[in-house]
Length: 194
Image 1: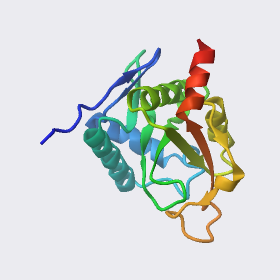
Image 2: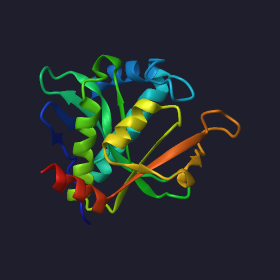
Image 3: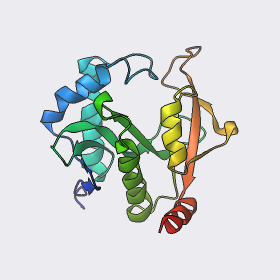
């Protein structure tokens, strides 16, 4: 019986995307408890809920070798948040799928870190995993994340928008927009970028 894949560690110019460590737990709680960071979620997360998410993300990385990684700044080793790709299996017209996502501590916003880590995650997904497509989704009002999706070359068809099943019916945050990026389009972008 084959063993589990070795968890991957990705490196960019300024960042390391790596498996989770116990030392990440406290800053991840701070990230998930920040009302500004969690503005486009139903509410900030309790420490217990944050821990459960970190454990689930680490389990995904341990099982598959990839997932939502902890992101560390090379300059000083600071934990700045989470970025990566992971399987989305909740019931929706586009699942099962692989989604890309990000969540950074506020001091690290607007420095290009999200885009840098997300681009490396896409490269890994398309080049190494040979995925045919990667998706992303968020609330219509989350313009910063939608801007990142668009800068990554992802595109949206309003017919793909959906009601997220983990948000209760009638809640104003149930409606989500869906962005897609297919491997062929990513390869064209990569070739054009040189």
